[in-house]
Length: 271
Ligand SMILES: C[S@@+](CC[C@H](N)C(=O)[O-])C[C@H]1O[C@@H](n2cnc3c(N)ncnc32)[C@H](O)[C@@H]1O
Image 1 (cartoon, helix red, strand yellow):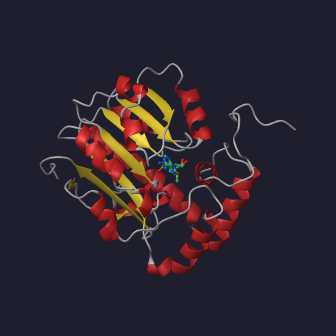
Image 2 (cartoon, rainbow, N blue to C red):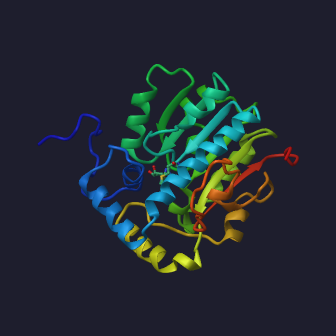
């Protein structure tokens, strides 16, 4: 049986992949048997990991909404994933018509599907890129054509930095972004941390991820905070994702294992 038409040439469908595992946990359809089995094994090891993915996605939506409410009109979303419900351009453009969004991911399925759904949208696009090579992203012709770095830009690094090991300098992307942008720009991130109450489950899932192209590297809150050194943390600061400006009607279970932060370049933001 042939592969579905959305599968780009050369994709390895025999190895689980973070983008497609995440897509499955969110209820998406751009994943393969190996990703589904991986996700189910992760769920057995860490019951609640699917809810964690949903909580991360909900935080992404709230952060983008908040940034759009501040008037941010440009977004650079790295490790953007496979498009699903509540994509950045949909949330941002609902508040700021014409908001520009560049999606970047290392996974060819994520990039191909993003480009497919964005065909004909002059304000959003997607490229293949690697967070570990910030200069290639920041000087990419499509990025420079879409984003105006003389105006504020929000860099989104949601649930991606913990796929970058220390030896690949996960903070470099933020440093290079800092050099490239003006005051009023933002970094918004979420990042897995070692959580004592879930230590066994986390270890099992970390072991599982060693079978994928992107192993998991949890960092303490202090080390996550250091990634945005020199930036002004927007209230409520660095907090579990479910605690970052939750919607009043939300009753999500707390998620202590993944932290959220939005930080502003320049003077501290309005509360
Ligand atoms: C868990 S998903 C998060 C998707 C989306 N940011 C969200 O929060 O809903 C992580 C994504 O990061 C991507 N990724 C992992 N390492 C990367 C790297 N070095 N550069 C760019 N993307 C990467 C994966 O392919 C995957 O799509």
